[in-house]
Amino acid sequence: MHFQWYPGHMTKARRMMQENIKLIDLIIELVDARVPLSSRNPDIDELGKNKARLILLNKADLAEDRRNDEWMEYFKKQGYSVVKVNSKKGGGIKSIQSVIQEACKEKMERDRKRGILNRPVRAMVVGIPNVGKSTFINALAGKVCAKTGNKPGVTKGKQWIRLNKNVELLDTPGILWPKFEDQTVGLRLAFIGSIKDEILQTEELASELVKFLNQSYPGVLEEKYTIESSEDNYEVLRRIAESRHCLVRGSELDVEKAAAILLDDFRNGRLGRLTLELPEEN
Image 1 (cartoon, rainbow, N blue to C red):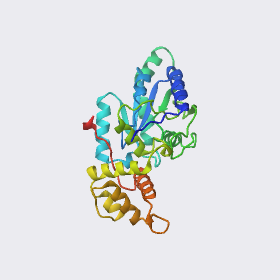
Image 2: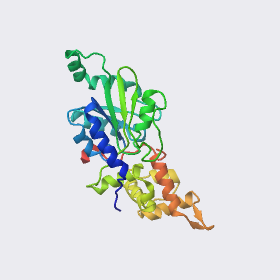
Image 3: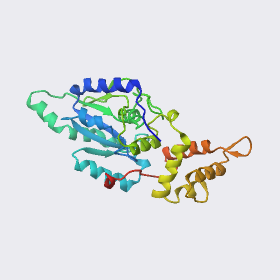
Image 4: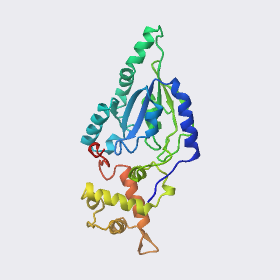
């Protein structure tokens, strides 16, 4: 299965980020806590050289807690400020303002020495599609400032949002990068919904998810769908179809529908807290 999705607006968005980076003091990068490395756009490091950096492990409630802690340590060792957040329910949001001030302490000190007082920190919020940037901004602002949606590509242009007298945010569209060097990265991004489902083979993708879950979280599928285990990925999908009464033409199993149910259950945390990649693998 080959993964690639780089629509035209992403090229435009990348250009826009390059143009605006000189106005920015801090880059707030959202990653998906289930795939913290795979959901990082490698271009961001290049764009954000010499800027203060804050990584938010978003959707932390969908990933294993001990793995979240391991990832926090991993990023801290590389010099990033890191916070676990759950933007939908507001978890971790209250601590963000103080972390922003801490991350920009040196810049504020430089400003003070030059006689520039009370200039707000300007932060650019970045991340790949469907990682929850708009939900995060709305949670931080305490009101709806950014459009949200449970599919990639909702934010198309940039917008400045004044949080308070201390912080201004620049919201940017989610951008992937033109070529995945490692197709495992593409696979993980497809699992979490950062690549448009319309260009994916649902059954094939779900069978890869079954394979991963059987290896890393044995018993999760059997318990969730009340099915017998099988080493045949497609047989597992057939059993899920049977368990969930996914039928076409009366009695034939609708495996594609079962595949879509499995992916949706995984993305929305209904299979439990699962982490797809570990720091020691990298």
